[in-house]
Image 1 (cartoon, rainbow, N blue to C red):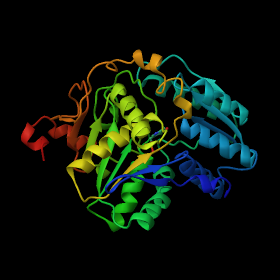
Image 2 (cartoon, rainbow, N blue to C red; image 1 turned 90 degrees about the horizontal axis):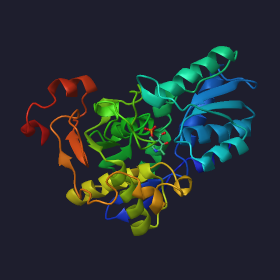
Image 3 (cartoon, protein in one colour; image 1 turned 180 degrees about the horizontal axis):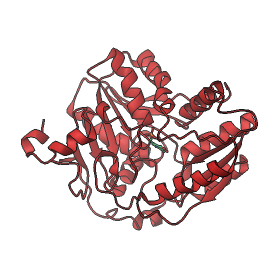
Image 4 (cartoon, rainbow, N blue to C red; image 1 turned 135 degrees about the horizontal axis):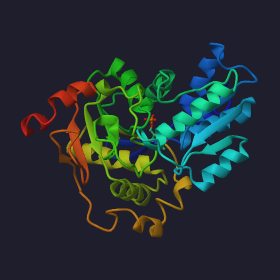
Length: 345
Ligand SMILES: Cc1ncc(COP(=O)(O)O)c(C=O)c1O
């Protein structure tokens, strides 16, 4: 399954002294190709197999690009976050797209998508579910990215990236630490996302955060976690475009904001930020002033640096961070709020 492999790797763009953006055309091409390859090797994916997946974005697009190349039927279950440009592109690539619009009582739209997916998997004999949230081949695929960083930069001190399924940050950090055990890994999430312990609530961002905790989020890889509001993420995405000419999606902006801040406070350290996709999909949203006016907090002042929280469960009204210290979620929550001294380490 070598087709499209040339598109998988990132360009490493210098953004400042020792700060680099790992700018992907479509980061999810790598885990998607790797998962399909492994499934074919294990006999789960045969020439006439129907692939079924839940996705509101880039993983679905990556699957559609691969499915059309290799002749698989593809059914994608998606939701409102699927913008009309991407929807058209998926149809053009031959994917069958189903949209769910009512959230499940628990787990929101993400759960509603998974519920619908289960029906397809039950009704279509021999269908295959790549399952980006739970399939360990997702994080495993990132060895290639770690290798590329080491080839280009030598030693890395810090990796920053958005966390959705958890595959990219958990997988890349794990591989890099085989050589650099002190690598400092920072995950970027958003308030109301359960991934790092916030109480579940409505999410106005897609690509990072979630209302369901995927097993591919390996909490023990993270030294520090940041939460950015949608307004902060969108502002950062504009800054990345205006200051560096990089026209990327909002999860890239999120990684940029945090990596740039950390890099300033840690001169001499080599920092890489993961930028998972390009900006074209977001022209009518994140890059549209009228749309931005509808976003809470967009017009107001935004935090220039994060506030340290003593528990990841605290309500957060703006950029916040917490010293995760490579612990499990249970461990962190058991000790959360034990005093600010512990939180400032
Ligand atoms: C645009 C975008 N950025 C970031 C991510 C998060 O990456 P991961 O799923 O590897 O945590 C995703 C995940 O779907 C994404 O679509």
